[in-house]
Image 1: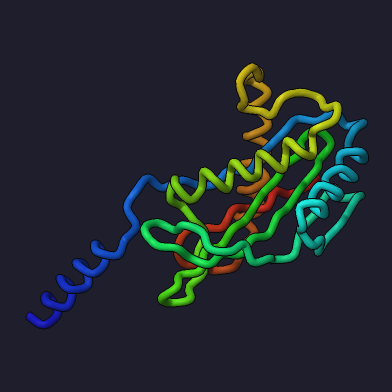
Image 2 (image 1 turned 30 degrees about the vertical axis):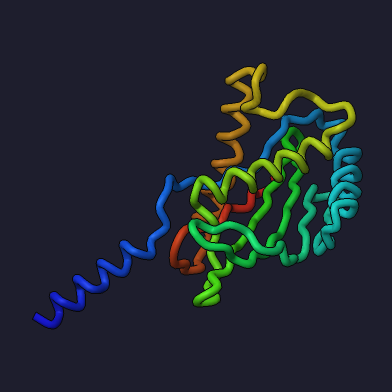
Length: 191
């Protein structure tokens, strides 16, 4: 009887504290590029991140990778409460694709637990910020519009997305780190 009462109390507490809303997996912002513009885009990405106040932790021009240090991002909405947050940003440039991935972690004010946002109301602003950074990097001449935006051929957008998803799957398949809760966005493998 005590077990049933404890289980019922636990279930009621879970329902009372579980965030309500539609859950999303954050997608990185992508653009198709011309291979000849790769070096110029790398320089533009580096200056864009520095101008926006990001501190660069990794700058690998040959590998086409920029990664920032983790930085406090201030108070953000997280479901029905407000949480402190931190962010890191990664820009990856392959021969034909430029990606921007803003990884934000929210910090539960009651427990101090860090978690990746999954609610629509939390993910949509992150994706909008990624797109704004991508657009700023691409503000000069570029190969074409961002895959998935109006006017882009569906085949190009689908192929770019498949390539990135394939790289993410390969990266996660090699991972041995155990996680609890929602998975953090995967980092694409640059070939």
